[in-house]
Length: 274
Image (cartoon, rainbow, N blue to C red; front, side, top):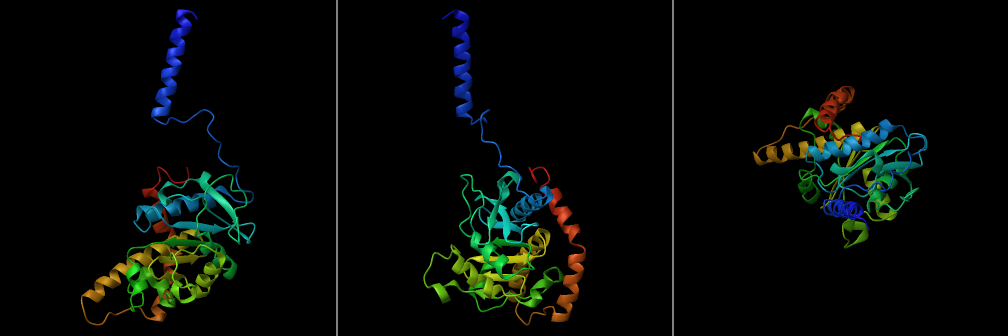
């Protein structure tokens, strides 16, 4: 081996060691999965944005997930592979059937609680998006006798009710996770025709006609819960929204939803949709 070749070999060996040490991307890294047929990029980007928005707002941390019904096939839905919400990208979005089976897993890990989404889509043809969070503000209302009620206009959707699903009632002592279709079906039944269902000692699920609406409801469910806890701590009777006020306010909120969505997207803009 000539001196020149020896120097080149040493240089390449050093570069390879540097790449391994600092985890530089390989030229042969796995390419992203092909786009899901019938799904416009904007929908996948909404799932990404919704996941990152809820992380930015402190409603989710390493856990929680956002999904959307497939726009061309109502018997399918889309959600990320198993990943912290703040890290989700468009390349992570996968397709599932309503039994919670990945259409093309391609070796990717999936969320254990995907059955929350699958069974709600089965039970509610009107639902086009589902969000599951472990909202810190909401948890106290899942374990106490105090119902979660709307006390300000942005949470007016709570006027229809926020039932609490008690997993122990049907399934005894569990790990608290919705790990199969049977538990998912029970949760969907408790949700009924409401926008929100609370999960005892676990979190909540919000639904809506779009990802934007489901995310809006997830955030303001948490905000309302925190405000209600503060109001109750002051003592005396809390003056909640009436059913008629709730219905009127909710209609207005949906009409101006993009104001909040665009603000939230601006906050996560450097990473949303990548």
